[in-house]
Length: 193
Image 1: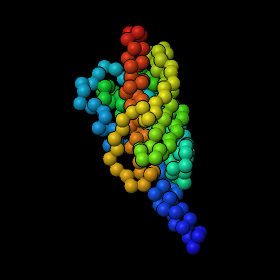
Image 2: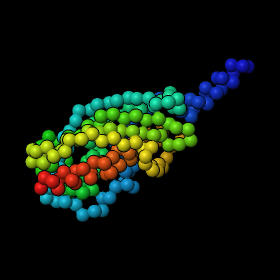
Image 3: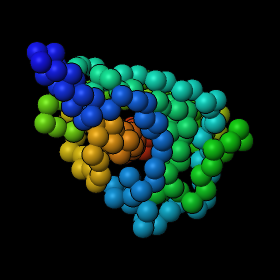
Image 4: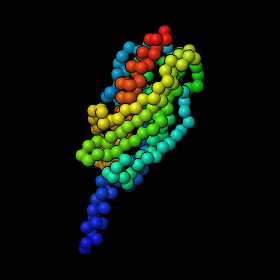
């Protein structure tokens, strides 16, 4: 009987934390609410995002809550698709290719971490490196970091702990482009007109 309580407690823990791997992919619906696609777009500038080879990184959360779970992130895909969606707010001609554009961007999602604090949404941290070239001249080379601990993120679904990871992951990555990368890009473009 003594061990029965432990078995029940462990079963409940796995029920609420899950014991599986969740794939995290770009989902446009998650960032639609924070994007501004009704703006007038720049038509005479072509933005080209350098394609990257698939790079899957599987991690467990930092901490004990949800430690039986893992997330699998295709670092190249989620980064490039979110970046493309970000630029389509402002520019009409945006593509992911190896072509030469007016502005060429090489971007790498270098690292991510996440944890599940008690009674809260997951805290996600991402680190992204950007190299921006305008007419083959490098105008920006910088690494940006952001954490959802410093942001207000609302999510719309979820029952299990892992259900709460994909939407905030998409939103925090989009927020990094909007609040950290965009001001530096605008400054670099202005200085290199």
